[in-house]
Length: 422
Image (cartoon, rainbow, N blue to C red):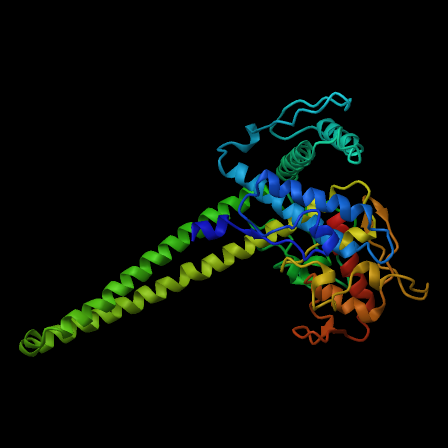
């Protein structure tokens, strides 16, 4: 059970032949090797070069490859964290850069400063400019530099989450959108904004709030603690199962002694009844840790979703196409989900007339135009779990927005997307 929680499998998207010739990516179990990460980077570089070539480029494939790289880098980062007692004192050592890269990097202890992150980003961009010159570009150095940037960004993100606790939201008198606030903040140490509570939670999000305001306090450490808790609960469940099996075997052993049973029927029947009652009690106790494991895994899933959103948000050149990289709580991106009809934000917002109202999400502090027709609104609010009270056939693939709910649906979608990338 412990191995199943830690040894997660990262599966790559299906590649066309020209990318398979670069590197045929395989599923990764647990922390990836250097060669596996180098292969992912190589495929992404080629896919990025041809993304604008008509008939060859594929934005959705590039998004899925970026998601696969994120999952692999997160697996390696978590593998490092599991062996560290005090993460705040962890030293992040950059790779040695060649002489033709002018930026010089130093080891980072604990959470990096903003200047240290910017310096690593500058070094990464500078080194990747030589990707077309094999004599000046080492794929291993590029992989190590990318992982180093990922690691220190995660460390800085963890520090910001600790330093910015979430205030309890107050209800605004007279608000027509907020119906109740009693269970807006109820999960993950009463600090996380539950994406799935619909009007109760999403109505309270202020546009442009950073992802930390969505409610992650030390997300990765919480994920590790939840994993350990799940392991303990699983071990307890296994012990209860073994004990119940022993109790079930005891009546069988008693039935193999007919003489003894015949001589002492009353005592044996009484003992058998007692064993069965104890078995029932153990079965009831077994249900509780099993349910607790399910709750723990759900919390871990939410934490990983928020971390993925934070990584996407850290890119400084995000456009509306970045929304197509935001996963939901099922780990899907819009273009791969049946809920959205396997359609992306870029597809449904393309070439729409001005008569289609814009959602106006915020990216990096700036409002962007994103015109989504009403027939698609219901699918996207349902995809991100903010559709409570807004759609018909919520549990069906034929999702449609209720009449008169268009404005509220746009507000919820704007607030959700702005919280992710604002």
